Amino acid sequence: MFDFRKNDPEFAERFEHFALEEVVNEPGQQLDPVTRHLAILATLLGCQGIDAFREELPVALDAGVTPVMAKEVVYQGVDYLGIGRVFPFLQAANEIFQERGIPLPLEGQATTTMENRLEKGAQAQAEIFGDHMLEAWKQGHINRWLAANCFGDYYTRTGLDLKQREMITFCYLAAQGGCEPQLVAHAKGNIRLGNDGAFLTKVVSQCLPYIGYPRSLNAITCIHKAEEN
Image 1 (cartoon, rainbow, N blue to C red):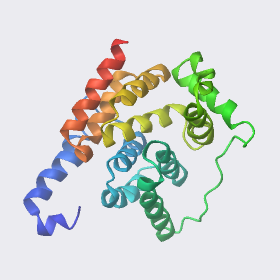
Image 2: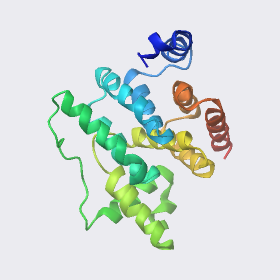
Image 3: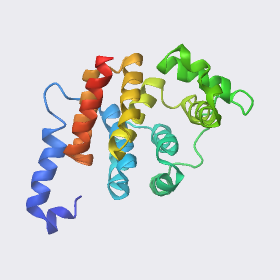
């Protein structure tokens, strides 16, 4: 971004004013710094903004996002984006951590075993979406993988709480586009956990400079649909 000040001064002036001043300070749409940067990191994963991620991660760390929190955002992204799209971000995070003298690997955050990951994952699903999810894994192998892998392997980890995990999932989905049914479902999950529509709207607002207006407006529509049901 900073090279743009020299090579694209008019663009840099307007973009930086909008993204770093106007959006950040919009009355009624502000988030605490850690939440805001977690959302932006997840959004950049979702939209595949690897170069912007390299710029954002050091800023996020300076703003109070811990290395563990940042890594959890990257790890959980695999569930919603696949390793093919997350691999470059994992590499970038490791490089930035090493540049900052942050020892790797980070402390472990797993709370499940290979034996109980399915049970614990189904419990996490039920906490987010309702008790009917306790048996949803029995509907087929993809549903079983969803419970054991997505929720049992990742949502049960420490480093981020369940509300933060649902918030970053909302960001992955909003940023990649084409996932509106899942976005509505996870908006509902967020609302059930206490991340209400007003909060999710703040998240979309703070991430808009990174994904643009079409996907941001689609995300707002999905929030409204979730609130109606």
